[in-house]
Length: 302
Image (cartoon, rainbow, N blue to C red):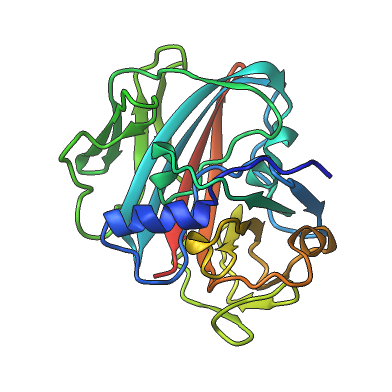
């Protein structure tokens, strides 16, 4: 098991992000990429459908991630990167394998980065150097009625986000959203569909508040292929502690979950976790040569 890198727990930074979005109400929140600290990827015997096979190693990848609460858009972000050394699809772990359990445990260094304020899931391959690259001046998301919204590169970190002052469209997220990428270092993609996602209604667990390493979670499974459930928490009161621990798991959408043995060991018997953030994550992919585009819809539990 790796020595954990020191990093600001996503749970804390995402709660900050949600406060900026006027959506943080004292519960948990959702994260962007899963870090490399204590990466744990335990196979299961799940029977859910797998994504279309990805051919060969990946040298460039991009992620489009759209989050919603009760069906209304709450966050949208895109990131693109070149991989220092091409990697097999398995390097993305549970993000590309819906029958896998992928958990990361991270320690806090108290530093909040701008990219951490996103509230949606943005996966990346583990244990490999990445360079941020461009994908064009504008990314356009469209519905059957025309353009829905656009993203532009953010100078500070290369992440694609809404233009300054712009807001996500109100009302339900349209069915059949597609993305057009004009291309730059990352190649052009046209009319690629985002996957559908079913609203996550509720997740039950013992006590309904703080959690420990033996907590059992249960929910009503979804019916959409390649869906996962995301569970994110950190040490209770972690924002005010000198050091806190976060656990971030992406698990099969089977209806129940308990932390695997390796995760329990990494957290320690005394782990006292805050009320978690839960979401359902649907993932699809599109590929051109050694460039992989990962498309994500995330239903955040309010």
